[in-house]
Length: 352
Ligand code: PMP
Image 1: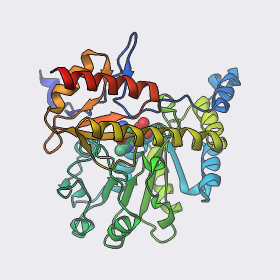
Image 2: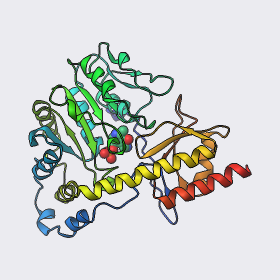
Image 3: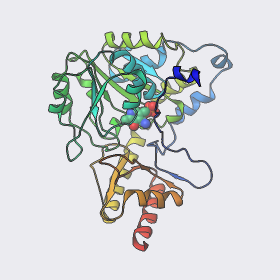
Image 4: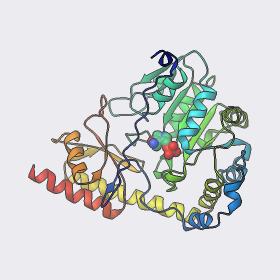
């Protein structure tokens, strides 16, 4: 059909399954297994008619101010979007507007190349080392910008701040984005470099450590100048990205730091226990500092284990991709969910 000649054709990002129905153990999209803070639920109950009737604050002032206070930066240094996916997409559009290719690791969040394709941004995948680490020397070359997650996904590996700074030092003439979706589970945040590097953008989310994936809240913190450029692009696209209810619940969430720290430490404790149990079952894994474990089995293929788990309504994530197609990414659930997984794996591996 003629009209199809003018269609923007893209290969979309494929999110993990959201299965519906009875007893499901859902360990495939790195959500938090615990509910959000009770204060967040209070904020939801307090939603008034006007929150629905009126447009929300396009500046997202209340939530930006709350985040600024929490991280000790100015409100003008904070940008908020509909999940960090929205924040990163806006950041690609704003900052990766040169001719040279942007750089990101070969094994990383599989949305980066999708955005690059969508926006027509040239890109180059930089191979991680044999043991899945980022070698900062590989990023000391001509480029149009850099993005990497720290901890990385789906490997879970956290790089030291020394590695991050080495990349920053070699790249002061482009924007460097550090995607810290998983930082609260054991990584070190690059926020401490903000005063030194005006070209650094740190991106975080409420979807994992703050148990609010369903509300879609993400944010970026950077220099005032960067955030104002980011806002110019956002306001050229859609002024009202954040609904009032999300903003109110986001504020309540940041206010309840005690609860936040409690659920994060529960996830970390479960992660470390499950690592020990998986080792007993002949799995090996990276030293994950995130809320998932990236594991491979000594003798049984990841694909076979993935399919067997799925039959049992236990959902984990499997990526059929070079270098990682014998790994499973297992989100850390509750103690009970992990016991169901471990019990099943014990039986399955014994009887096959
Ligand atoms: N970055 C990384 C590395 C992720 O794994 C995810 C989760 N899929 C995101 C960003 C986006 O998360 P959200 O849009 O829910 O904030």
